Length: 274
Image (tube, rainbow, N blue to C red):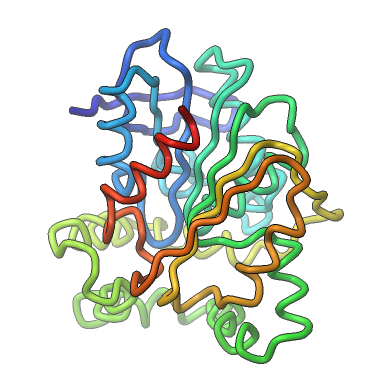
């Protein structure tokens, strides 16, 4: 079972789900687009039952209490700052960090900029940003896969995604996520300003500065049927980690790993974090 949590920070209050003893080993789990903290419901519950203190927040723009109006408010510096602010409020000097999709990108940047805060890092689907940038320069397949990131800068994207009972949003999940869960994501993103805030993550532009190689012990989980991230960047990610590194490739699984194969992913996380 998970509990509801509110995490106050200088930017506003983040909604979150949590499980496990207050003094358990802390784990923060970051969701991606177009989802919410509940993508981690299974993992949070199991981690909590195993004695971890697992917390998964609705990130900036997804939590109604942290939904600023300017595109610039969704840059990577702000997103990484949210991670540290939440950890500080929770009283965590060091913690394990897990991320999927956009949450994975935030996790990579956090590990690069603040390695001393993290015990271990686990990233699902999203390759290291350095590996992805290289693939975008050298691999036509990855450029085609990533075209949507540029398309979503268009001001008509919200209208198209929510038209016809949000059919475009629903199709993104490739019928691999339970329909009741998809309904909940659509309900949340249909709130005034919510989808614009989520899309502002894409519109905020590239992070300032270069990302470093990662010295934190890292698990990277990638699936062969991921429509967004191809094998070029996935296989190159190991060259961007100098610390202990584990790569797990899941065959015949789509981008939606946490919900399509929750037990498999949870087992991998327990092995890595334990």
